[in-house]
Length: 127
Image (cartoon, rainbow, N blue to C red; front, side, top):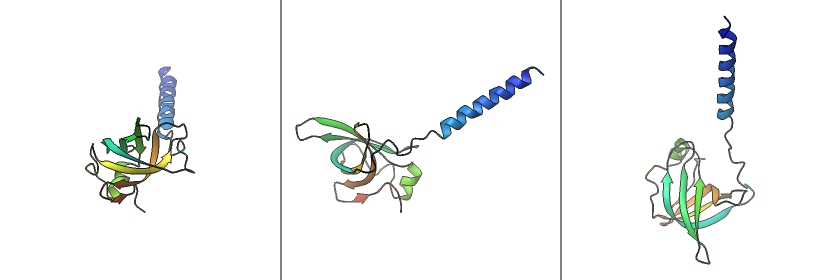
């Protein structure tokens, strides 16, 4: 019987930890939603996985430097409903990405629109 309170405590602590992890999702708070930037670049990697689809791309600056950017999108199921698939992008594709920049100044954005080299516009969610 002495082990019963310990078991209950262990289960309660475990549930508390799991609940904290489930509700700790950052959402879009790290992005400056009052600003939108547009960048032209070349896709280096396209990860069509949950919890967020990510597009990694290189941007050449006016002074010739290369910046490695990441555009974060919604979940793969949300993107699928908007017409995206794991074959939508591939390394080497030329893109124009628009989105909200990260507040900390890192090369990271919350994607709001993507334009392919052929002019096709894609949004990361379905209205």
